[in-house]
Amino acid sequence: MRLYLVQHGKALSEDIDPKRPLSEEGKRDTEGIAKFLKGKIDLDIIWHSEKLRAKETAQILAEHLLPKEGLRELRGLLPLDPVESLPEKIIRERKNIMIVSHLPFLQKLCSLILTGSEDYNLINFSQAGCVYLEERKETFGICWIITPELVS
Image (tube, rainbow, N blue to C red; front, side, top):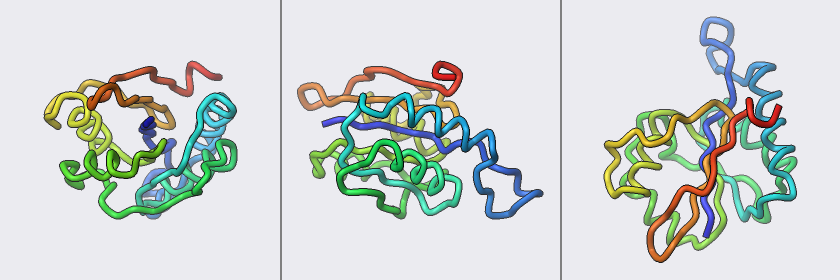
């Protein structure tokens, strides 16, 4: 089982658009990551939060990565949502899942999965970046981290 954690791409400021869609830079960065990962990863599904910037990021990724089960918007993936029940849901699914969400949610989820506590800031996520975790004998380990700067 593989888990890919993606922080949404850069969004417009709330002053410009209160819905905060992706900026042109955010779209380019996400597209760059998607093109780089195409053919390198096998995805069953992409879960994303209900915020527009996460949905747009997930859509760009799905266009290139073609997850077998498509996209699914999930409640409980917002920046300040609790993370404690999500690892069990991920393990129950037994699928290769990409989660597109926000900070600090992703930092807490990653910490909880890797250490059993959400209190450690182990990964410096970057917008549109992808962290790949893989299950290893009932735990997870970090395999790699890709950022837009590495693939441009």
